[in-house]
Length: 152
Image (tube, rainbow, N blue to C red; front, side, top):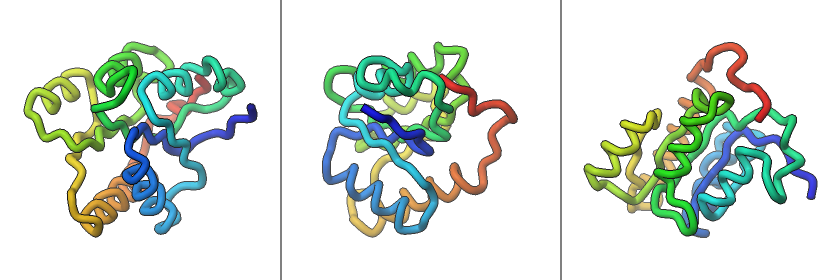
């Protein structure tokens, strides 16, 4: 399997939310390549270049991870914990984009070093606008430290 580099790794188990997120980001031409995975285990395989993503071993890491928290197999909290625990990935921006508004999820993700916590808006237009603003900020306005795009 040939794996392309990713500007954004979208970790989302809902097919509808995946499609809406990708559509919002590509509509504004904020990214060239979005890789979408359906669960936390696949996200970790992608980030750590394992399994079907082993070809990624020398690729740069994604510029941003959009991470749902309520995921099958491995939840978003564990994905965040492993990202922040790895010296090559720990500074990579991670935005929790989730339906959760539970205070415990907000506290846990910030304790683990999430860069932002956003509760998904319910209305289509509000969801699209929120994703566009996330993309605009993290892909265009934000300036990561030099050398932060190191290979995985």
